[in-house]
View 1 (cartoon, helix red, strand yellow):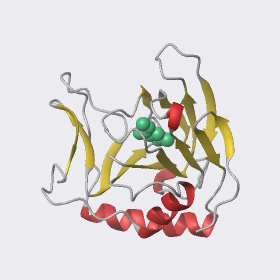
View 2: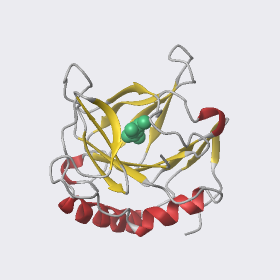
View 3: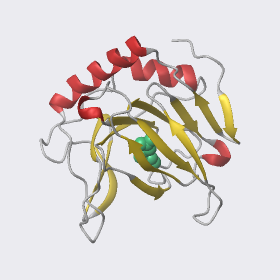
Length: 205
Ligand code: SIN
Ligand code: FE2
């Protein structure tokens, strides 16, 4: 897979707008939905409080990121089926290597599904020890208002619209940048069933 030149959004943050054309987006969505049949979406909850997330999640790869009352962690098995997570679809592996030529294979692909009201609070991806490897996120479906901050919760933040087919990488000085999804624009794209959004986050753990 060849990628166009990335836009430098901030130090360590690269955006490839619509890196996937419509037919590639449809192909990737097909691969994702067929893997989801083996690893259905789960309703994660916040550590301690048990408050449900507004997104539902599943994973592909050797390790999956889960959250429940016991905390955030990576584990090898789907919490409900007890089976290993399905492999990361080859198209995502190709995208990873095209975007991050120096990185070893990803170990985890977290899949977030956003319906009309879903959002994701400002957070850092910090449950990994491989902080030298960037995080790569792929967006499919409805537009999302992504918030990008700095490495402190109080750092100023900016809003960025992520469209279907966009790739966003954050690494180096931005690897621990705070980020989140303020909201999606439900129905702005018909790709994902019910006008929602799927985000695929690839990481080394
Ligand atoms: C996340 O940070 O886990 C998700 C980001 C996104 O949905 O674009
Ligand atoms: Fe994140």
